[in-house]
Length: 109
Image 1 (cartoon, one colour):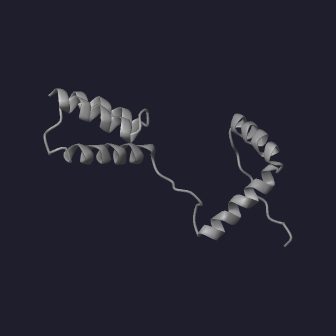
Image 2: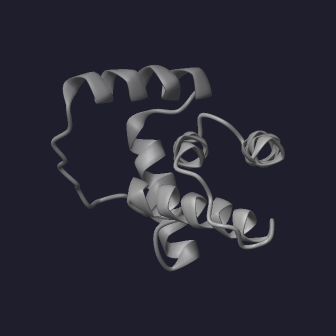
């Protein structure tokens, strides 16, 4: 197929430079990368990745950990657990570490 259509896009210069360096390591140019991206959109009949606001992930993680806390007997959890939940929701600690910290605190109460 002949390539005869043009796309003009304005991007931040720093982003373009950083992406060019990555693409050079992969052995492809920007035009080829954009062509791959457009073909992936066709193949997936939409964007080839999830698009969400960062808050969605934090809210989901907060809810997930709150539900896990509820499994400990439905006791209301102390305010100090909010810090643990926040650390987990931001991705600073993983789920197992958060549960461990919470269980350890429950043992003290």
